[in-house]
Image (cartoon, rainbow, N blue to C red; front, top):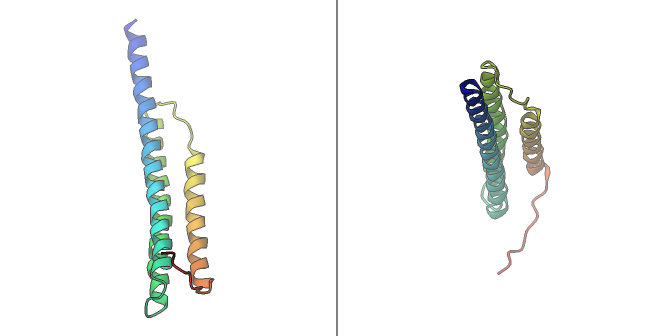
Length: 127
């Protein structure tokens, strides 16, 4: 009876650890999306800066930061999952983490290029 309780307790702890890794990954991905939003907002709100490329450069920095954060989050989550496997944890493989991270990174890079290729269009402010 004692062995079964110990096994159940360990199994539940392992499940909580896996879910914590996934929650942390999701938090970093949300931070990536926030950096993309800040970059886009900066470009839209301060597009008239002088010199004209300055708003694009600052927006690009935030968007590239988002790409970096998503890849760093994926690497960190995969390392944590790998450490759990070494302790005979039946943890799931995490290809979905990799897909999400690389999709966010690729989207960020495409967006950064698009910011430099698009023409400046005056956006009327409502108010």
